[in-house]
Image (cartoon, rainbow, N blue to C red):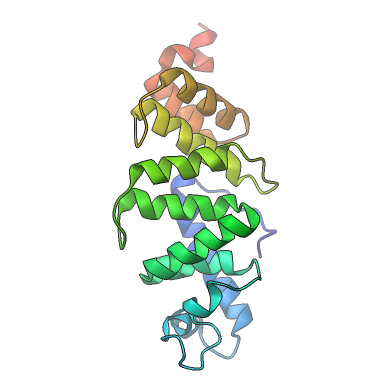
Amino acid sequence: LWAKRYERDVDGLFAVLDHLTQAIIAVLLPSQPPEEAAVAPERPAGSGNELSYDSLIDSPRRLKCLYGHVAQMAGDHIAAVRIFQDCIDRWNDVNSMIGLAQIYETGIGVPRDLTAATLLMRRGAQIQDPVGYSSLARYHYGMALVEGKGVAPDTVAGLRWLRRAAAEGIEEASAYIAEHFPAESPVAGQR
């Protein structure tokens, strides 16, 4: 399921993750309809449910990083934060950095912390992951630098990260540059 290619806007990233989560849960728990399977991990710890979010926090299996997004969508932000943090600590997982940064940026279920969110995006931007989440982190980190979200504004560095993300195929980075820095846009260079 992860090997499939999904053509969506960056804003649709979490819709893709929702779709993947439902598909994976359906594969892992084929005897349950996807709606019931998606709810199964919400049972309290100690209820005999091997798929509780709490039981995944210290799991050595990398698949749990996906469950961080499931826990986040289900509203168990504390478990999501702990799962994402463990995935970051164990594997330097950029997708988990993005998920955790989103939690800190929105402040839903945890105190809002733009500095922590931006630090996670900076860390993800500095990694070269084979899946391409680091390109997405570069885009978000570039925007944070330009806009001064959780960090002192630094337009020069922000543009550098945005250009790199754009060169790596993040169309939203190209659109951001064109909108906020029209003189930097490739179209402007052709005039």
